Image 1 (tube, rainbow, N blue to C red):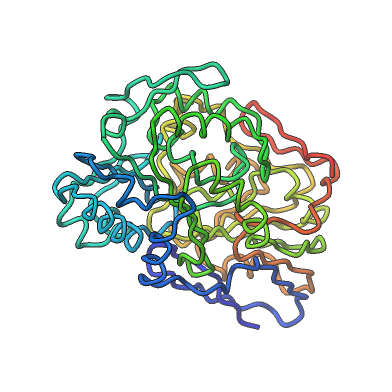
Image 2: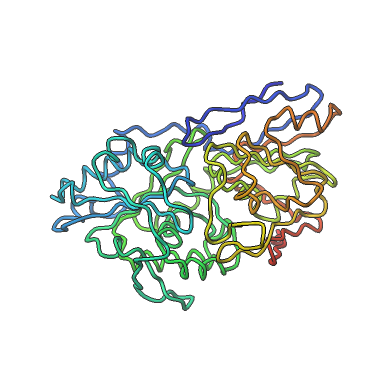
Length: 425
């Protein structure tokens, strides 16, 4: 059988065609929102005329002299252009001059974006007209207060000093904050290196409203004085299918059931071969398998394939990245990730192999179970044609499994010096 694997998010969303042996027992488990229709520009305009809050941006920003639009960077899949176009219209209605509106990419501890990447996120007309900047975590950050976890919140001075502040991003499950989106655009998005480092010391808790990391991000958004937050849910083509306009707390809490329903995936049976495709965050391939419960889907001595295809390769990360073979790494680099013991073989499948910066996401390259694969044929030739039970997760970063995944027998996910075990279900 043939299967089209979703790939190249923000780079045309061109699928990779896979030839699967007929004697494989293949099950494909996608999320419910995959086929949700995309919002049009007209739909988005209507949403901004009826926000969750009582005021539109045009009403709320009246009297402000300037505005900053903070948006997620090229490592995140949000197509910002249509939303930004409507926000600009709203700000003009508030009598903020177009030359007083600028854009800040919330890069956190990722590298700065280049012009071509700004165009992919914002579109050519916006980049031609407006000033677009990348956040710098090392300089020009102001302390705006102390979060409830007791450490300083230092944020991009350009954003702090703006009269009106708007954030645009998308919501996905996340190990640090339960869900991304909302205030995560502020911390780590536009925070200083030290604030970002402290934020990442919090315990992991995916799909939780009680994660300490989420509390930090909400505190940070309040301390910044973020006036409006726009959060999107994306369909399987990376298009905006849902849009929440309000604040960082209510966008998630008031819509939590809808978000879970949107990302629900029927829990599959464990398989001999699991293909976990990272379509939404391909520059951070390991996000697809970043929680220990995931490994319960791979049978004893089974094969795990993580696919992450993008011309961007892997994200350069000043916090967790490896910056040479001498052991020198980012601020919080602690060593390579380790595969759980029951995995028989692991393949990092990418048409754009990136051996230097990507090691943190693809597990320990010195592990004999680890293999690079630039093409699907390499994997098929290696595995052979014996019958297999096969599970394909086209969007492995997003699932809210229903029912929840059980504990993987003895599975421990080791990230550098830190080990994580599954939650009790």
